[in-house]
Image 1 (cartoon, rainbow, N blue to C red):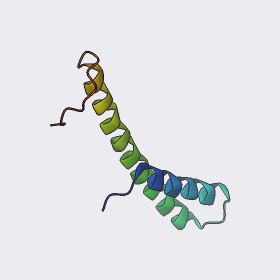
Image 2: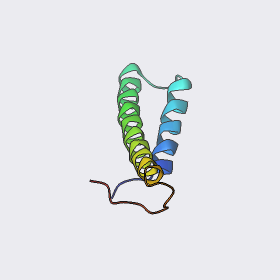
Image 3: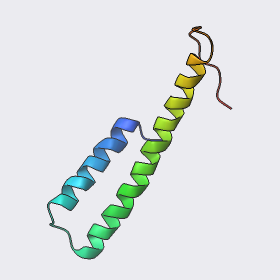
Amino acid sequence: MDKTFSQLMKELETIVTNLENNDLELEAALSEFEKGIQIFRSCQGKLKEVENKTKQLIEENGDFFIKEME
């Protein structure tokens, strides 16, 4: 099951906090950083989906319905 945007952001915030605390060994910090990049990309994808739906609504001359995305 895909995680929600909010869930992903919470995970990302936790990773950032862990990295900022400097409590991790180098290898663990690198692993967390890589995980954070993956989560960031997932968030970008979810935002892009929302942006596309919003554009579809706007392009329909004020008619408020969602056209199925292709």
